[in-house]
Image (cartoon, rainbow, N blue to C red; front, side, top):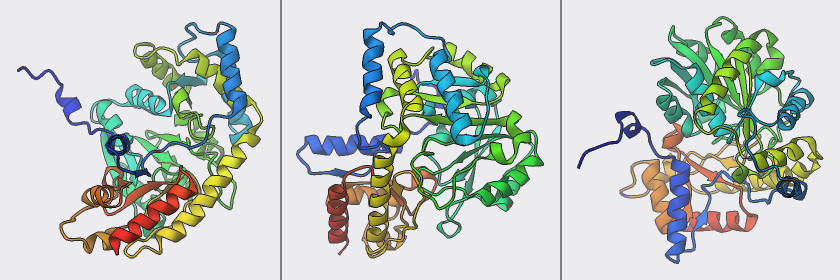
Length: 394
């Protein structure tokens, strides 16, 4: 039989987080009582006023194609959000609405990378960054960070990673999978390095921006270094903050030439995002933001409980985060005590089979020896999961 699959696609790995969720669902269908801590999805429902806006859009006949780059109403809502919450000003032609923040990042990489261009990706990283870079023809330059440095790239590491082939750096704060967020002085130090390399673009993946409880106000490189705005692209969306993962709306803001190129790519791939989802997103961004507080409060309570509980498990070591909804413990000591377990991938499979708890191994995030646990689930599930892990490890 002929092999019609391209060599490039053969190099791409399936999403580890999706794979874990599918495996957990398969075991549940087989009658197993699996607790899934793999999905990066809020366990809350979309707020009612957002759902109502979608219903009204349907009833009003907003069911046709929109402009490729998004409806005027949503683009204005995004512009207002950036000005109100981030201190950044953009024009209409600097905004592109896409089918999720993941789509926005993919559009960006395809728009700016030439074959062989390098993308600096601090590790641990979101699992899709390297493979999206590969699909766009780029080369990932992975910069590993340690728990001892709070999983954040240092200015020295950044400068060492930059070469004459460097095209882009991706910063994700708060981070998936670690929950760590860059402080103002840390961004300042990274910005001082990037100032010296005007050929390097910067993109910030801020999808967890609203799920943040750090002790200082969150900031961004655009405010700290306005002189670099002509090479910065900001990625965000409504999925995490507003519990709208299935609505598939993300957006990018950046230089006109880059956004125009991204729009061109989108026009030849997906065209416009869902018209109904765009109407709902207008309500999300322009509406009362108090709906975010109960979710953030719940995530913080679960975080505080889970980090303490994980550190009581023999062989686990976990630092606190400032946002998102993940814990990312080092489990090397726990693994070393189990015969036949040699890495975090095998350890995650072992937990699934023996404790019926689904976690994501750290290797796909660029951090071997760790696992990621999502606390976007009930406290009851978290307590049951930790009890099961303790039991099998004892």
